[in-house]
Length: 496
Image (tube, rainbow, N blue to C red):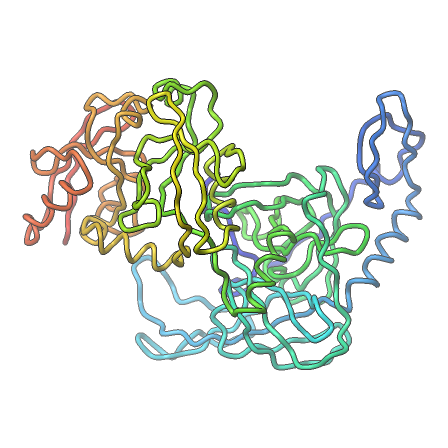
């Protein structure tokens, strides 16, 4: 799925459009008789029925009363959030100054400080006024105004943010607020009814309904992607609002939509409440989120890679690279090892291992079981604290001058990678990411391309690429030999 269609649902930098409300199919509400299936009923009660057992559908009136009851229960905890951010407006290539109807332009001119206004949603989760919302709603705010369902308004202060999960906590002063309960998102089932509440396009206290379309969605936005997908209508301004089950429990925080038009197209995403609870607890206690860290670049193993490692099956996490000076650098692990067990828990995938490590206390010595050359081995790693995404990016740029020169991040091609990609040339560097509007992007380079030469000089590792570029500091352009989909070609990259 291309991330260019994934849009945060805060109303920052959005234009107001006229939309037709989505309607539920009347057929779902008037079906008579019974069905034979295994399902969760509309009231959220989990039931396991055999193929021969019958489950009666509720009447339209019963379903309506349930929606009404949940709305009355949760709405007092749902808030509208208006924010002001300071911005320094600068002219950028291919961009125009954004403007929201009803607000002045963001800034008085090029290079002059201005103000950006936006609106989103949130949900009160404690009687003393702690509110869970999105980082892209409140994270950069200098002023935060919260409006409750009864019309009362409060100034809020930012408690903490977690850009990795796009969550934030803000607080209003008081000790007797209505609040919503965080439910167990781990119990959600596909097909279960849910309700989204918030302020789409600034329309406060709006309620929409739908079902759980899927759970555990990895959109490749970050290492902790585990989104709930729903067809409940979510639009700009819904960001930070709750996704609620039929018991009135918050099971997710609405975060983004998949859309080509900018509005709801029936595919919305929410951060699961179980993840939200972990982030909330740390932000309230410490003002930040601390996560365990190994310092490994992990990937899933394909059958061919697993076979080359002498490993039957594909479960586990393959070590692509070991971060210099990271916790794992002091262990026996190296590129090509397959991690199969972490702290006594079986490892099933790179993502699962990342989550296990994140939940491990910093400083803890953990036993890691891995496979190398067909033999199981063990090592001990002392867990470090994960740097922020910004710190990781800055370190990568500092360690790899090609990041600032070409606008790419790369990894050395291992024998396993060469075999998996069926490379004609078995050495080089694999492009992992391309900086938008950088020299490499302008030249048409893409993630997955492999660089074999720079100005006819062989490139065998990230270090040799860096060294070659250092010798070409004053060059206005370079010629790269690149392999893509089994085809070799030469590409000129201009630095002007």
